[in-house]
Amino acid sequence: MLRPLLFLALMAPATAQAACYADYKAKQDDPLRLHYGVAEIAGACNANAAAAELRPRLAEAGWQLLNIVSVFDDNGLEERRDSAGQNFLRY
Image (cartoon, rainbow, N blue to C red; front, top):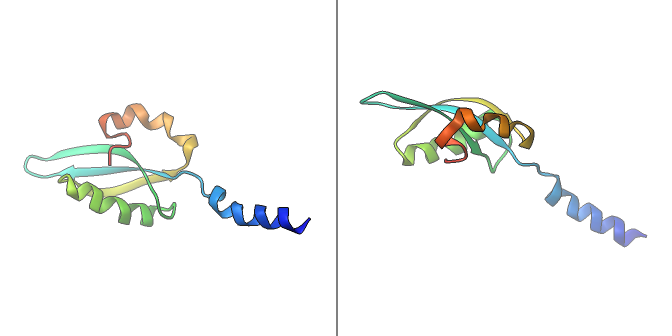
C-alpha cells in the first residue's frame, strides 16, 4: 500500500505544473513600432518572473518590453490568438 502512495507523491510535482503564458506589450524605436504578443513562460507564473524571462527574448529581436499585461494558463490562450497575430507564441 505504501509503494503506490510513494509513487503518486513523487509524480505529483512533475504533473502539477500547469502551462503558463503571458501577454505583453513591446516597442522598437526609430521608427516607433509597438506590438502586443503572447509568450509561453517556463518559470514561475507571475508577472515579475514573466518580465524577467521575456525581456532578454524580446531584446534579441530588437524589442523592448513595455509591460506584462497578465499571466494566465491554457484557459486564456485561444481568446488572445487573434489579438496577438504574428506575435502569438513567437517569443
